[in-house]
Length: 76
Length: 494
Image (cartoon, rainbow over all chains, first blue to last red):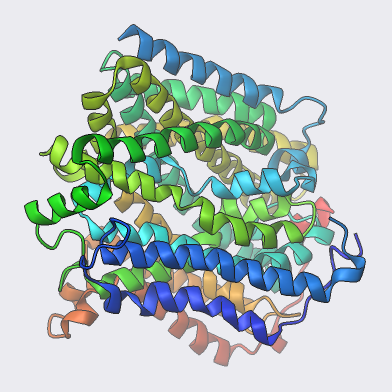
């Protein structure tokens, strides 16, 4: 319980979490076309799918880094 | 006809029985009923939060927009990913504050943070105002799904009333536990069904995704990218921002934060949920496949595309299974919304008025409100003509107005006064109301503005009005001048 309520400070690598918003908002005008088709998908859709997958990877990386910092008292 | 009906009926019964059984072993006081005794682990919280991903909104609305509008539908994939990356930081902070204070509703959070019961009532009213259209949307979807997949042998109105009755029964009995149990069944069904048809239809009719998209681009040039004006990149980006900020402002998802056993649950979910929502992609595929196979569905009828193409392609048994999955996508979010709306009215509107009410009475009032809210929503579902995505975007504009006040409250104490928070929310909602009722867009408000400004989602205007009013009032009413008031709702819940 003590570890569950522990406050976590913000760290530099937390800024990685801004990347999905950049790709999925600011990137849209640049990715807005049907050609070329990638994996059968129109380019805009492929761009979005790639960023959604990247979001998971980015958040997973942040989570792992956070866990490493808090490792000693963490139970599964 | 009878096979699909039998399958639909069987799943309906299983969902209701599961919902009722979820109560077992738990004394249903208000805390158990609304937030599951704060004992849910990763799996249940995951299922509750994933509830947003596969509601009738995605099942019918997602395929409907892919079919009717094309590329603008892709926004549905974007906002979730951004909201989840935000949730990694936001939700643990909310949970950490709510847990020791035994908060039950979203409004409780604002009351405790700003020490203002008045703000609580405002937030509660906003919550209910947004939840009712959301419930209407689920019931409307349920009516469509059941009548289509039973080949018309059950009328939409009958389906809406049967669904409403089922929701009332298991929500009154099991509260949020019923939602979590049926959510497990729903997610298995919907994964199987959506992936199966999203893979099968494009391959069967076009020989693969590439050929399908090329055929669509040839038949409707420009359909797979955003247009220069109207639903342009500016519309897309502003809509994604608004809906991402509003995502966790929905009272039922905000309150589902309280169900978690510990805060790490949210971090794990922030990693997994973006991948999980990719299943929406298969919903798009079904809608796109329908485009050239069952053409001609116009306006709100585009919501029927997934079911129409399924009926065109598969036998009755398969259609029954697809309908059953759709039925569950209406029942699960529907039950969460009902729990949330009833709890909010009882806890944050009734309790402050009836100061002598005990927890027992409030719990009784909450359950008594379930049928009332459900019947109102059912009546609205039967008498409105809006398409599903339109209804949801309206609700998003309403809940997003809570975001500035929430963000400003996250430090050890709020950065603005409660009066400023209230003023901002009220001004934002008033703008949403005027804009929605009069059907305004930025193009009508600022006819001489450049095109990219005209295409902004009009909800952005409401958010700007909200922020301006909030800032001005905050300057006039310094937070140090807050009046300390008793907080009856939170105090008696602890």
